[in-house]
Structure formats: structure tokens, C-alpha cells
Amino acid sequence: MSIFVFLIPLLAYSLTLAPDITWANYGMDGGDLIVASYMLGVPHPTGYPTYILLSRLFSEIPFGSIAWRYNLFSANGLSLDFQFYANYLAASNHYRSV
Image 1 (tube, rainbow, N blue to C red):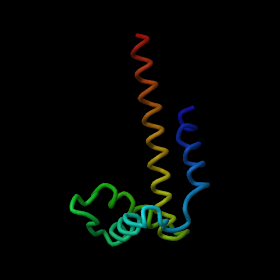
Image 2: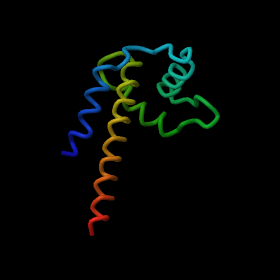
Image 3: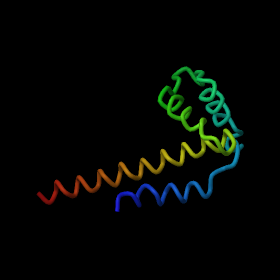
Image 4: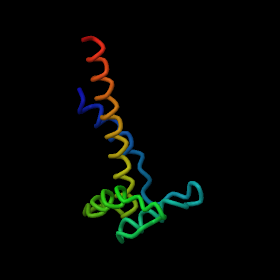
């Protein structure tokens, strides 16, 4: 059951991934974060170190454009959020019944 909580959002998001950088919000952060992660730089003063290091792993996937790979990283992040939330709900319901 829990694997479906991860796979269904991943499939839905993967089927609708943007193939390249989108111009939503005038393309302000998308390209900035992609370049910073690909070059292992610092995009903003806060740096977003976890995003930079984890998304860099997805840039090594041998297919698709660089932007598509980073969008795939976001899809995986969303799916993991669903998974963590489902686990939280399952655990909280378990402890309520005890």
C-alpha cells in the first residue's frame, strides 16, 4: 500500500513535467537554481545547500535535458512528501487506537 502512495504522485508528476525551464514568475529562480546546482555554486545568500547537493545527483542521469532532470528531482521530492505524510497519518492513527 505505501509504495503506491509514493508511485502514484511520482507517475502523475512525471507525466506532466516541464521539458525545460518554465517562464512562470518570469523564470526568476528556476534557471538560477539549476545553474547553481549544476556548477555546485551558491544561488542565494542562504545557499539552499541540501537542494544543491541532492539535485546535483539527478543531474547525472544520462537522459533528458538538464532542466528536465531537475524537474524530475522535484517530482521525487513531492512523492517523498506524500510518503512521509502517509506514514505520519498511519502512525498517528495507530497511537490513537492504543
